[in-house]
Image (cartoon, rainbow, N blue to C red; front, side, top):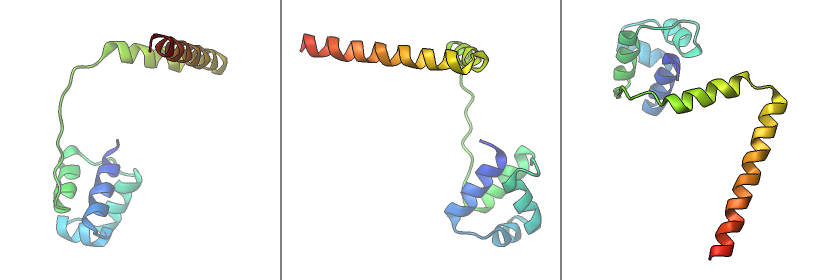
Length: 106
């Protein structure tokens, strides 16, 4: 999620206009608008300032990277549309086989 999306979400949840948020944070309304649209990429500090001016906070965690998931993403990104379709259909076949096996065992 981009910084502007955090700001927009916090502002909307707080029921504030861009002008009201700008006044609370001590910045201009056009700056808030440019941040929300992604035209300006604010620093983490500026993003936090704007979110806090809405009455919210950011809760950020560092978590281990799941290398297996990342490898799957990279492999999927390099696949052709036909390869992606083949993988999806194979997954559906596997799912159906598992469902049928479950019904037989029940």
